[in-house]
Image (cartoon, rainbow, N blue to C red):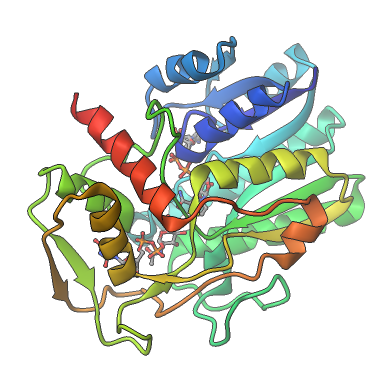
Length: 332
Ligand code: NAD
Ligand code: UD1
């Protein structure tokens, strides 16, 4: 059985990937410092899969800890989720973001090199494309201007990985996530935003649950069919399955893949679909655009479909139904 290390594996995306990997017969070892996750998630992964998981609490920037962890287990591949991800916070705390996201990756690469571990999957983001002007974006679309330190760390990390792959025998895949939403269909794991959510879907589910008064829709004057901004929302379980495929594929050196559905949905479409599938009324108002937001992005996923034999299967209705089930489970 192949042993796979998930850094940041108790987080939103890592926990869903852990479930899918265990389902496919992999043995999972999770490293997390619990800075943005809760230990109960470990029990939930065990409940869903019926399998035991090794958990190591520690920081990705701690080389000795990493070195010894990799020495203890015969790890064949690593999926690197551990990072900070709040765009606004990254503007306030740029050094923290460069330290965890960039120095953390370099520390991991050193430890992998010292153990001759070649397989690495990296959590990148469509934010590397900045604000593109033609759609869908392909992997050949150049990196664009991304105003936040968070976005810049993803561009830097991809550059570091590509350069590292030129001088050593690596097999590295960067997965450029579009907008991951939803939760596991069991309702046992999902996103756990701290404080007021910045992202659309958690804000919608918290408003529907009565935890927030109303949703603010940021801008209705974009050059889009209904004036609200367009994104490529992807179900977190589909996204998780892409990691399993990327791990199983032998792509060699370095490759970056778009992981989205290839379809764009506007904010108003998301709101309407949420009301339709849940039957819950969602109070909302239109306000000014949010600073730093781009009007539109969705991805061309043909390259990923072909390279790793993967395609997103779940639509917006299922994403929102599952997000709502998860939100309701948190209220109990
Ligand atoms: P998350 O915050 O839920 O998970 C990250 C996990 O890493 C958390 O459990 C946290 O405790 C852990 N962690 C943070 N710093 C650490 C450190 N120094 N050492 C060890 N563990 C540490 O985030 P997520 O949504 O699951 O995102 C996972 C990855 O995907 C991140 O790299 C993120 O930038 C990237 N990504 C996320 C999205 C998204 O919308 N969620 C979109 C694009 C890319
Ligand atoms: C944001 C980040 C991006 C990150 C992604 C996933 C910014 C500028 N970008 O993307 O780097 O990879 O999250 O974590 O923060 N919206 C509302 N009302 C709300 C919240 C959001 O109308 O209360 C709108 C936004 O304007 C946007 C869409 O909903 O048009 C999606 O927003 P969000 O979920 O925050 O994701 P992104 O902005 O696409």
